Length: 303
Image (cartoon, rainbow, N blue to C red; front, side):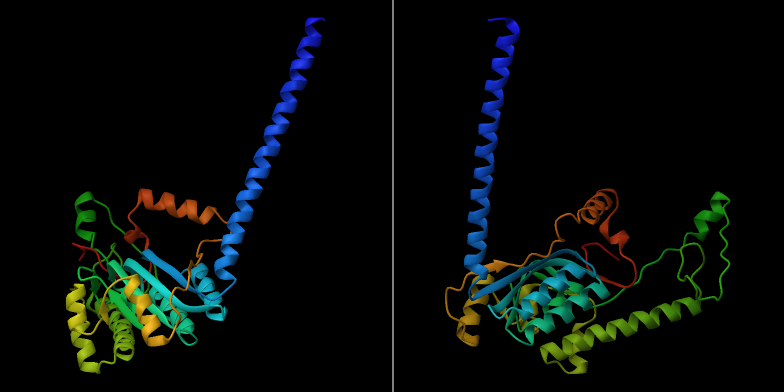
């Protein structure tokens, strides 16, 4: 047998082995997929509880809104558990989430379980639910709105740099760090902050059953521990998901032992670029600095 024949035979043997391993791999992947689909159908194909997790900085997210709309329409979902661990985010993000959760609550019970932090826009989302549970050490509240700017004109003067903007009116693109904060700009900015704060306070008053005076007193921007929040009726009970599920059984008549299915709020497969862009942005720049518009967020040491 010639050397070329030996090489040819070895190549054929290698090709057969590779083909065999490819078949084994495909069968294994198919088996995993069948198991996964079977498990998914076992839960979502019958009555169950849905669970959505709200964490990180809250922004206006169409994917979460769409997922909650599906929960609202699914008759097999008997209640929604909302796990919240977030310092807040944009006002519109919190408002949109609030409205989406209220849509779900019109047809089925919705309970919130607060984690380490649930402040500002995150608390706005929490008050949309039927009952709020928190740990004793949960940081919550921070009912308020802010718009931040900085006056860099003094620094620019020292550097010999002058900034000039040609604009249609004195309130266009104001406040701006490139020009002094005038009384007119301050008043206009304060007016919009006050308006959004009133909207936030009204949400809390309506959902927590407060009169206007009590709501304003509690909505001065301070944070509360879980124990303090319970004392002020900003939450309903100390506890976690187990206590939330027990409440659903005792007060809403749900059967015990319903399985829980996590709501998928991620974009469809293939829509990966926004996620990569967001991850890269967060690595290079604080998330708080990328928030546009009015924000309702709390962070230790923030001003």
